[in-house]
Length: 46
Image (cartoon, rainbow, N blue to C red; front, top):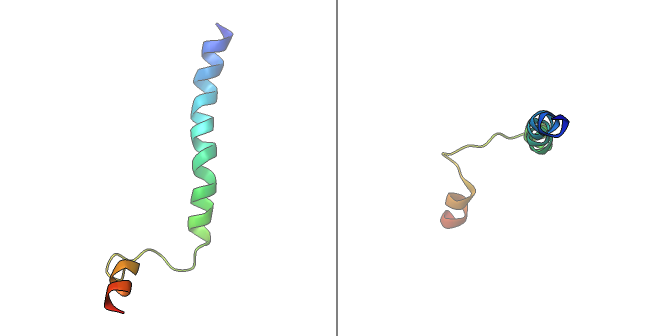
């Protein structure tokens, strides 16, 4: 019974552990994502 309970507790923590570095990296970015001025449109216009 210990293994299923520990898996139920551990699995959400692993999901958060994988998302946390991505969220921190996105928060550190100076520029936010802009759909109006995407990089693809800048490359096509050049």
